[in-house]
Length: 280
Ligand code: NAP
Image 1 (cartoon, rainbow, N blue to C red):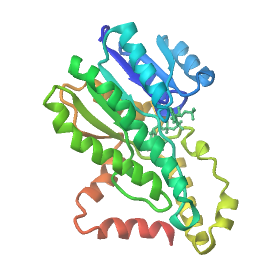
Image 2 (image 1 turned 135 degrees about the vertical axis):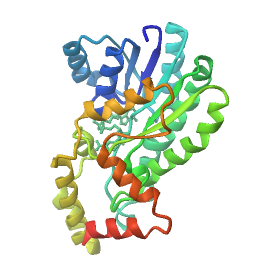
Image 3 (image 1 turned 45 degrees about the vertical axis):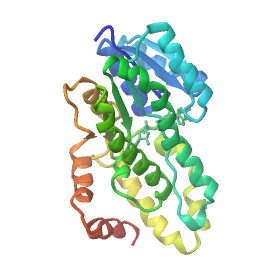
Image 4 (image 1 turned 45 degrees about the horizontal axis):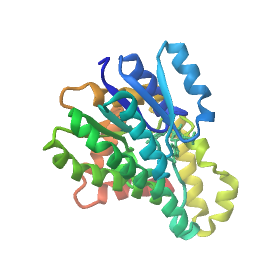
């Protein structure tokens, strides 16, 4: 592994941080990128504690110039790229009547176009190494969930994009995978910056449904099915390490069962029955 070079986006916290440390521990030369290098303290601390060596660089997935600069910089300094892990992403809670089209566009910008931009810059270099293109999607990239319309739309887009690209990329030796976490205890929920009481009060006819959704979500993130970032990052490592990784890799048995409900749900009634129960 020592000659392999992997670049990971969104490594200031959570799954990206844990994946960067795990990739470095595996012996890969690991370029851990963040949109604001001033926020690298937790990453540095975790790497030091694990004895893992990281090359920390700036990359904002919504800034095309920073994406190009980061990928070009890696090629200039290392001469190769063996894997890209598109991990950067951001949640969003809302429903159509209570958000602007601009809000939806912003969610798509980070979670979908950020992935497209970074993958496009990396692909020629992955082709040169017979490399891996790995994207942290979500179980929300398979099952549409209440008050997650924009977020799930972005993750569905990621899955459709990568599922379509995978056979084409494979003709040139590049392996494409998506990783699907369920609830993982990271900064994800805090970073949404959501004031529950304010949101419920502002939700008008959707207030009761939103309160029910939030109660279930809080329960999910505090239940035993919630994973640690390191547990979720293990699925990223599987996508890096396996000889022939699956296209779709869930991070837990819970995530496998949950996405399995959708993948077998030809007329949509199983998922509608399940998620309808979350908001009543
Ligand atoms: P997190 O702790 O909030 O980490 C998200 C990372 O993405 C942060 O490092 C954040 O950087 C970065 N980021 C946000 N916008 C960015 C941008 N424009 N350019 C570059 N980096 C950016 O949450 P996480 O749970 O680890 O999320 C990682 C991935 O897992 C995301 O794609 C998320 O959708 C997915 N996921 C998470 C869960 C969950 O329950 N936690 C479940 C399913 C899927 P800043 O610190 O600068 O904001």
